Image (cartoon, rainbow, N blue to C red):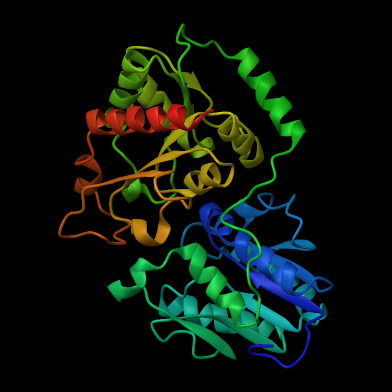
Length: 367
């Protein structure tokens, strides 16, 4: 066996990141379960990800560490909850701790080193991002700044980490477990909504994204919604979390026709059921993009400052469509960027055409 000379009875997988990051970890979890069929495999996630994999057959339990936002901030009021969680994890006596997320900053590296010490696993592995993972017992090379690492997809990097334990993925690509109860709830929700007269393809238009600098401007989104409804006779469903309700209201107020507004009305599992029933999703570079890919729905993804080779929706060649007009300043992680020129350069007319092209391919592929 690579890396260790014992069969672990208890494994803790850490993915303290966003929704999309956790979805992209599913093949690595599948590989671990195939390799360690009798081991207890637990998962440590952030609060917003607590329910995403509750139906995943590859894990035994999900633990939550109370951090907030993209930078996993810790509020003082949550400190005791975090300490209690760490105490419970330490009492589990894990044999192996696996961190699947990169160490984006020195602060992130220090916090992960502290987490490893607090949990007290016999063996810890992860990604040595730009030299910040030297404390692991074993690691894969990784970099956020070296462009040569941008060619490897995040899903593949997750698999590289578990290969340190001799775990190989027996499946292919993403999967997700949509439940019939969520499908029925989506149908009940849609039955209450007022659709326009359009009878064309059902298209989800996602407004969301914790990273504001990755969001498409509201007026572009509104223009695209109108184009989809006018030219393709599409049924447009606006989706997003509770935080996106104001954005949805702004976008819809700019449109000539009224789409179905589902912003703030669905939990993440209901969103998966909705996306499963859609013909296509148009979205920013954000978590639901990967959820759509996981349920097998094509994505037209709008990338501005992101790295599509590393974070594009995962699927067979040509299944998903990436639109990006990179500038000299991209890729970047300037969370405070106000101009978002890289996103403004993506025009509604171009996106509508890409959607139309992808729908034609989908129709041609049907028997």
